[in-house]
Image (cartoon, rainbow, N blue to C red; front, top):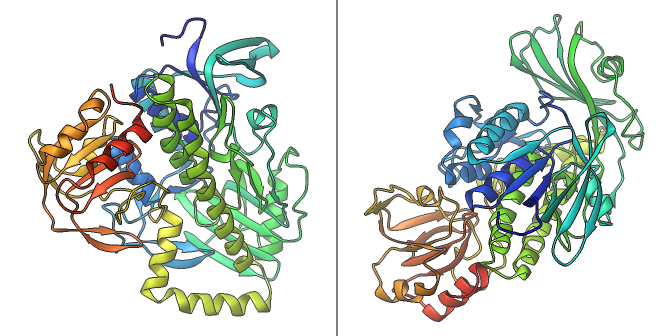
Length: 504
């Protein structure tokens, strides 16, 4: 960190998956980071239960995916409102969702963050914000109700749905209110004769039971008899979970020994803007929704990967501050889309004869390959296309992890992204492409390679001819591509300047 009068370059509020992923992205770029976490230690609560294809790809892009695969379990199917989807044939090296608890994800991300030099300050909750032209002063409430301040260039709120950062920054959080309550807990069920109960629907709601380890289970009830607008700060009791399971299932399966109980609702809200001056939002601080389809944790981690390289470029003086506006422009519509599809899934989950008829029709439609693929692309994030100024089927989309032959031994595209730097990939050995990038070689890796395949698979597009050259952003999305030869090198230079600052 080289900014006089600053304690750090960036303060991140929240050491959940979004905050830790963002911290790692910033440190890869050489930005100094402090993560301020309200809790004294990791809670160990299981919470979210998996990661989708695009999140697995992002971790693969950084060379850390094997850590997660080693302790998770790949699944052959996913679901849309409890209706099965087949993921095996999707155009990705990692088409299948990985079942892995959020507690394990946080532990692995924090280990990686520590390796990279991220500082995590626990028992530190953001209680005040003061912005000025040079930076932001962050007031922290620390252990034993003492106080401290940190001075930084930027503050990012990754502090959850009740984000203190969002409220202190004065950012509105509009959306739709809750209409029901779901209760969740990790408990022992000695009277259960099955290891797995998937989305069983009843007149009063529904429930599911998943075995994570021998002897204990994740129980979730969707209880329409509970008011959806109850005080979210009211503690949830084990007895409330037990009574809810009896209401919707007719039994509590001998429930005892709770490790953790909580609640969530179908409220769906999104921050009106993801940036207010030097304060930005990511993850649940920017959007909340019912967790059908398992999208929330993935959405937050992908927010972090979109924001990380942009914020690093601005902090390091390589790009103008206006680059940060593209974070809202790209990720707000993605969050809006997730809120939209989870509202649809919630509607499909409601009890009643009309909904049962709708589910039957929808289940028959999912049997069609095109419908299955469309929904898989939506849930995984593989279908995302950002609005970039380029005319090519790959423009704005995530780059396929194609097999390559390179002089330095990299065998596929994602291996080129391990350092979190942009890559100009020249697949035809064009002198014009290399020459166009001469003013950016201090921050863009120019790689000459050969593709092992004549055609590349692209979700929502189909197979395309292997491009001649492409500019890949650090988040793995394509900023420019040429179908044949060197392409429009003037357009390449414009893309380089737009995303990575002026030529040196």
